[in-house]
Image (cartoon, rainbow, N blue to C red):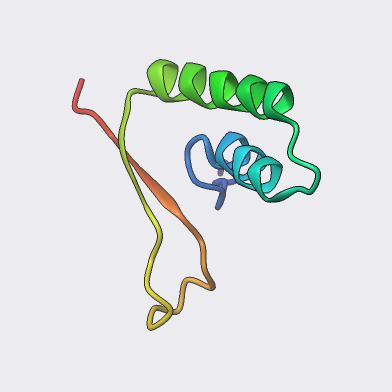
Length: 70
């Protein structure tokens, strides 16, 4: 049986970008690289939408991404 990943599609790339923009001092060049990485992932995985569940859910704050139909 395959082990399923609990991490959302492009989740690592999105998290890196979010953490980058939160850093002080802000390094725009570094964040642009993370943005480009996220964009490449979104295109390659055909993601059409990201969502962050409300705090009411039992998902412990995990984000999700929706893929475009093939």
